[in-house]
Image (cartoon, rainbow, N blue to C red; front, top):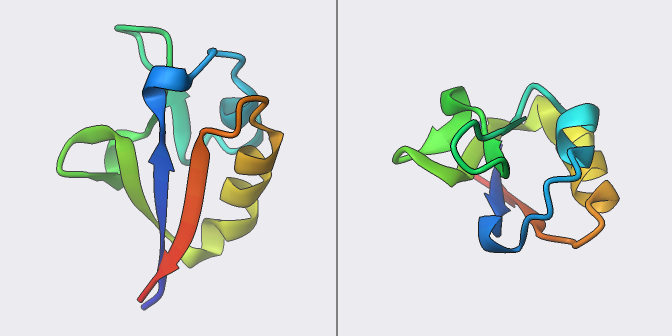
Length: 79
């Protein structure tokens, strides 16, 4: 089953919350540092900046990545 790999360059996050607004199923704001992170359900190895999400969320994830003002969300298909 195809999935999407989602990576956030959290060091460059400016916390504008566009990704959370557009795709709250995948993105949330960290209570610790106020930066965007992948929700725990989809994280890879507990890393808040890396996740694998079902392909059904592709439109949501891509719209969040495109709306990010600093272009730090990267999405790619994996098999």
